[in-house]
Length: 206
Image 1 (cartoon, one colour):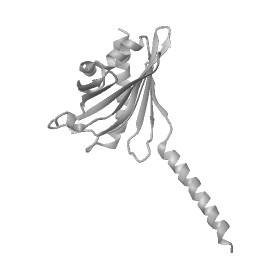
Image 2 (image 1 turned 90 degrees about the horizontal axis):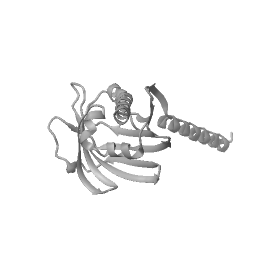
Image 3 (image 1 turned 135 degrees about the vertical axis):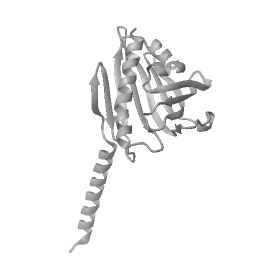
Image 4 (image 1 turned 90 degrees about the vertical axis):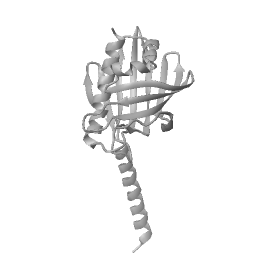
């Protein structure tokens, strides 16, 4: 028997299956909610039990008004879902800053907090993007009863659509850290962005 062709065939099959499983593990965006003008998508992330989300909404407003709202950290509890605290820790410059955010969690799960780094770019005159990532945890003191998150990656994107309309996109993948039921974490990746963008829309369209 000629083992070389057989070995080669098995190797090709293995690579094909590996690539297939890798693609499936990474996943593609799936629409999970489309209501009141807000669309929420989720997808699997390789080597993570928790899904990423992407939420999109169109608002009758301007890029500048939405940008100002996103940088009004003290106002976060008024429209960001389950947010109880938002504050600026350090402003490096107009395009880089550190923010502290606390998210309320349902009993008996502990509240989560995080130091986030904002990196602001303006790809064009009609678009602003705010990159978000977990910052240095030591920049904010630990709070008894809270669990400090140390992984988050995502962005806000504000895009002008013309005629007094803008599109807001928020995309995030995060690890809530500590002990939290997987079903609760994955349900939050739909409910949180939906409620947040809906309230953002209502606030900007007042």
